[in-house]
Image (cartoon, rainbow, N blue to C red; front, side):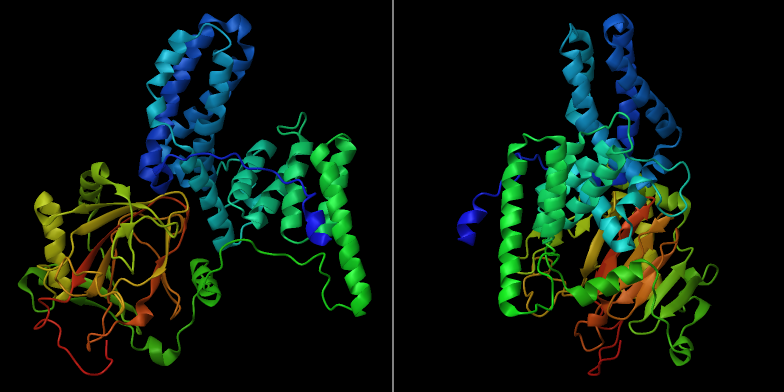
Length: 535
């Protein structure tokens, strides 16, 4: 009987869309040009409005809004995009608002305008970019414990001139979550959209539309009583809403069934009508909690005995090149041994690396542990480029510097990887070395496993973006010009599982890094082997 009744439930159907693979949201370096591109597009739109201003009042209003936004953005595009809401709204404007402009223009003789604007359209963000930007905001919410109200009001850290979102923009975020079957974020953002729509005059989105999504998603997380209340509120506004009537009948039936079950069993410890169900993919919960806590700055405190092992000193490692300019070495964690090299890369070198990397930036990949193939993953959002030593003198100098500092040969190291993290850019917990079951991981290189990692921080990050080691509670905060170094393998050649690490989502700012993965072949006489588990 219950199964048959379930067929009466009318649900919202997401429109089937074939997404073009969008990658713009994965690097803020690419999104910066959108700010300037949008400014050019506004200029073209203004020219058209002057020609037909008498009958294009609505277009003029939209254009003025755009002009105000782009004027502010172009004053300092990088700082403007550092705020994740600005970055999201930039993508949103291209995908939603500019389409509305096209609709209005097509009502008139606007061939000149459409010809002008069509030049920019191939460079627009895609629907996949829009989805990626929305998911990034959800990720920031989860990691840094931000409410939907916080994000919609732009209350993220101590940012100035914070952008705000209206009810329609909150609804659009909620709809992305809905289409991703992420019911918890759907409810969060539909509630925020409802709250804002009820205070707007006129509302930017119909309240009944928000209630339609909110009531169904509330049911999907297991709160039947609230789903029924919201559906009744919907029917008060639109008494002839067909789906609303179908859902109301279903919710009432389900509540009656549950009420009957409670009567049969005497007393149930939990009210099944309010049992919230998380529809999102399950992850390693303890590690996830440790990772997110470290991202928020909840670092594990070391004992005094362990702190005594930490050192800060100038070192030349008996290498003539470093006698006059020794390495500023700081041991910041003992197990695993994490070393920071301060002021080890100059601003000029950083800018040169960015220039070299910019035309080569591609969405970062991960290596499939089963097939050994490179592929995209939702848990790594950034763009990267690979630079060879012979690409430029600066790249060669950095490789030599790593060799001087670590004493390891670069002959078998991988190329220098330069990466820029996009909106909410992150890389979830992972190992740099290949585990025993990943026999084909570096087979093509024939250089053995990754023995060590050198990671250069090439930008200051306003908030977020830390490198964290969730198994041991270590946390490294990005500081421009500083590099982090650690061994991935123990002296026995076994992998050091305490080096499992992650790049926290960038909350505010842009994060540039470069890294060198050093392999074990050729290091036989440079790092002594041992049978113990020493690092």
